Length: 205
Image (cartoon, rainbow, N blue to C red):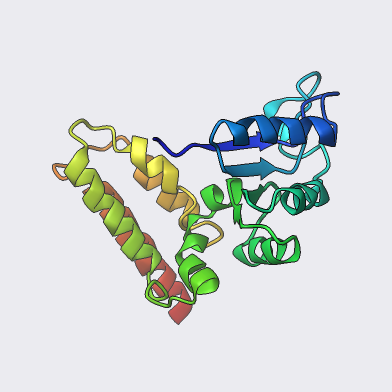
């Protein structure tokens, strides 16, 4: 009774034929899985590191397109090499897929997700969410759920919030600092107020 989704590559090493992929999808479809997230790059386990496997084998979006065309009743979602919401939307439309998954780019630059509802669903409710608002919501979460001085377990996942902005490195260093605060979310609040002030001063100069 539990919904199951599968995320997989299009192949592994020499086991990368389209027929094998189709067979794999078919077996799991028969078992009750109806949503597949396909990373359109095969994995080379012999000779390449995990990092290299994210970049070196070429992407094959056409194989994912063919898979959806031949299994139109299944939910087929594209993954791999998508670096913007606009690109993901375009691939989804051009290949007639059901959606896309953005991985590393969203992790490196999480603020791009604040535009997702508007671009994908036409909903502008989140349009005015600032980086400061995001940081302060995370700080509230830290206050509510963390009991030890281990806020880094959460803040490490938003280290890219100010990526490519003035003093972003200082902001990251401040929230990773070992200093203790009575309210554990205050470290993030103070660091965020500081960078926002510095950005404002730079813009006014």
